[in-house]
Length: 249
Ligand SMILES: NC(=O)c1ccc[n+]([C@@H]2O[C@H](COP(=O)([O-])OP(=O)(O)OC[C@H]3O[C@@H](n4cnc5c(N)ncnc54)[C@H](OP(=O)(O)O)[C@@H]3O)[C@@H](O)[C@H]2O)c1
Image (tube, rainbow, N blue to C red; front, side):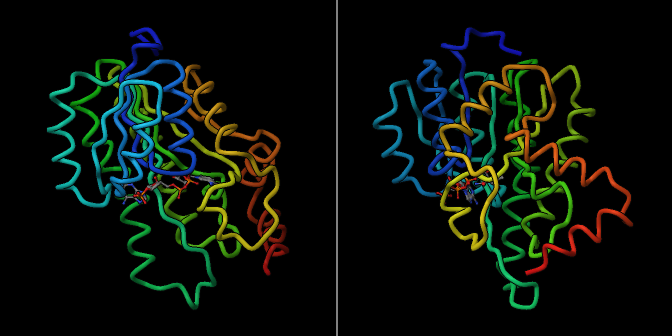
């Protein structure tokens, strides 16, 4: 996809204030890209921008708020066309279905799923012809697992949305889906179970930057976990559901 040299790319990373998004900012900064960093917490973004070894602008955004994205769009329009937009923003709140707070559940849908659509709409006029739009799903979206909750459902929705956009925008925008396994961030620190194949945010960022430079629609890692879950997804329900029932805690 790169048209511009990697050291000259202009990249908008949303969800850059922490976790994998912040690690991605470091990875692209080391290549000399020009970065626009977004999330809700402006102070954290400014702290990161101050230490990154590249040209960086901070544009605070709430992806669940269409007006906030429209304002960001106007700011970014003045900076020139983008080569990539990578949306890592998401919320996660694990718990049993009976105790899940309905307001929090609605917020998770708004940020993770509706927010992904809003980001796509906002990004289109900003991306150069053939530029890249990467939305973040998860292996949690491959198949409904017990205690998976609304987070997993939103990630299945993001994958579906990315598939639709990939077809709809073919020839105009290089749409990608990022499906990480378990990565050690504040998000997974909420998990009370052992996470197979747990990776550092830096290793996750390396896998993402490497795979986004290649041609495959889906960026997924670590393969040992993602391929096993893809196999589960491919099974008929009569075989898959008895397996997932065993995971009930
Ligand atoms: N960690 C994992 O194991 C894992 C596995 C699979 C998929 N993922 C996905 O990877 C992505 C990054 O996750 P992470 O683990 O790095 O999580 P994280 O450390 O919690 O980072 C999430 C980022 O999203 C931002 N954000 C949250 N709500 C937002 C909103 N309404 N508007 C704009 N930005 C918002 C946060 O910043 P502010 O709070 O400042 O807004 C933060 O920068 C997410 O999409 C997550 O679902 C993670």
